[in-house]
Image (cartoon, rainbow, N blue to C red):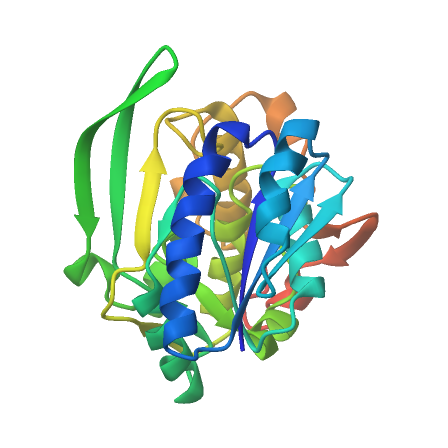
Length: 274
């Protein structure tokens, strides 16, 4: 079975669209008799969010679980602990996922792939008050996604919709909950240096929405600081950029935080000591 995890927090503006696309996604997979579940981790939900998620929670393939700890990667780790599937992945509440890619990913996993990643579409919007106007659509495909271990260990080429086998997650370790934005980047670089089997799917995974409201939208110093942490862990300090020292001091480079526990980062990537 495949488990898709969505983490929500102050997501009222996206839940109506998400619910519509999720229902179409589910209907497609149900028609194919494809085993899947959707686990929604709803962090500190408002009354409106609870109301909007209530109809989804009635679907047998969907579970909505309330969570009281802020942080995207804390929600991801918690969702993964509750997921029942052998193949795992995420659906950002403001994105769209294509079900054909999920079926292909399951096939690749059965053939031995540990990490599956996809071509995908970036759709950029211009925010005008309460309205979002689509302005450009870009397909990320082709040579840029060709797997090279060194490239993938120092850059985020897995995209926003990568998936992974449960065994790979257990071996690679949890997402570092120190991060606000770059936890997926960190996790994927750890996987790259740990010799997991990466597979590029043929189907597009979906649409990654950029409207200036998401965590990773634009260039900001928090993202730059977190990228610096990853580059330092991967021993490519030449890629780091100057940021205020106080920002860097917020991160423990040598350790990964999971809830209130700390794990040695190098223990999670034994083939890449630093």
